[in-house]
Structure formats: C-alpha cells, structure tokens
Amino acid sequence: MIKKYQASIYVTLRNSVLDPAGVAVESGLKQLGYESVEQVRIGKYIELRLSAANEDTAREQLNQICDQLLANPVIENYRFELVEMSAQLGVEA
Amino acid sequence: MIKKYQASIYVTLRNSVLDPAGVAVESGLKQLGYESVEQVRIGKYIELRLSAANEDTAREQLNQICDQLLANPVIENYRFELVEMSAQLGVEA
Image 1 (cartoon, rainbow over the protein chains, first blue to last red):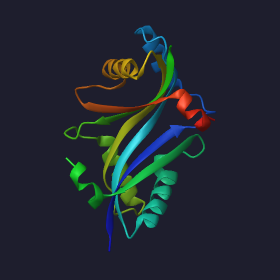
Image 2 (tube, rainbow over the protein chains, first blue to last red; image 1 turned 60 degrees about the horizontal axis):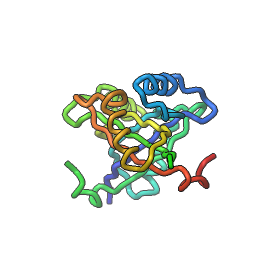
Image 3 (cartoon, rainbow over the protein chains, first blue to last red; image 1 turned 180 degrees about the vertical axis):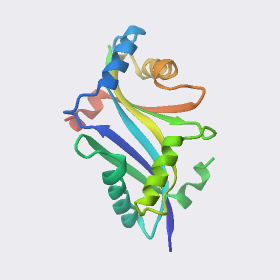
C-alpha cells in the first residue's frame, strides 16, 4: 500500500561557508538594539508531501531529492523529518 | 545571571499566499521523475544565538525580532525553538 508522508527539510550552509545574508541580518538586528544577537545563519526550510511504499523508500527518495535539487552538497548540509500523514490528521488545517 | 540561548526560527508563507518558488521546485521534481511530490512550500530557516536573563525574556525578544526583521507578518508565519546553550554543550561542534 502506498503511504503519504509530510516532509520538513532543513537546508543549512556548512559552517565553513561564509553567510553574507546572515551577517547582514546580524548587523541589522544590532542596529535595531538587539546587541546580544550573534552567529546568525540563514538557511532554507522546505515542506512537501510525497507518496512511497514505506518510510525507508520515502527517506531514500528524499535524500535523492535533496542531493539533486534542494541542496548544493558542496556548500550546504540538509536534514529532514518525515511524518506519515494519517498519523497527523488532527494537526492538519 | 545572563543566559545564552540557541534559537531555531522557521518562517513560512501563510497558506493563502501563493508560493511561486515552491511551484517551480515541484514542477522541477516532477520532471526529474519524482511524480508523487506535491504541495511544496519554501520558507526560511534561521539560526541565531542571543543572551537574556531568562527564557521568557528571550522569547519576547525573539518575537520582536521576527516581527520587525525576519518575517513579514502580512504574508508569513513564524515559529521558533529555544535551547539554553549550557544544556546542549555536548551537541556543539
């Protein structure tokens, strides 16, 4: 049986890669008076739904999707969470 | 005593707002052969550190930061997680 999964994917810059947008936000926040803010890093947060026979297949497919399209493995890391959709029906809007 | 917190902030488009980047990614994924992918939504994921006297103050400050700079409340929602830094020393690289 095919199951539906809700995936939340986090794509972040590797620590060794400079994040100019993060630096800009940090400096903006300091100018707004939030002096204590530091180490701002900006990444992407992607939500999607996909169907697969089981969770292992879904994870494998998501790894391929991230490597091929969503993240640039040279400068970015990614991780994701998978929730089977029937298990979260109560949460859906 | 001032405590340090690590914040993870998720900024997402409101459901009623069209997400052209998400539509483009979805169509790209389908062309790559991932036919089952749907409802792709692209948001921002921001990590930062801040200092505050306690968690309530940190939360209040983060709400202001999100409203003022990180999210556009008209079209975006945000949520965040806070972890006190001493509590996750073992996790840090």
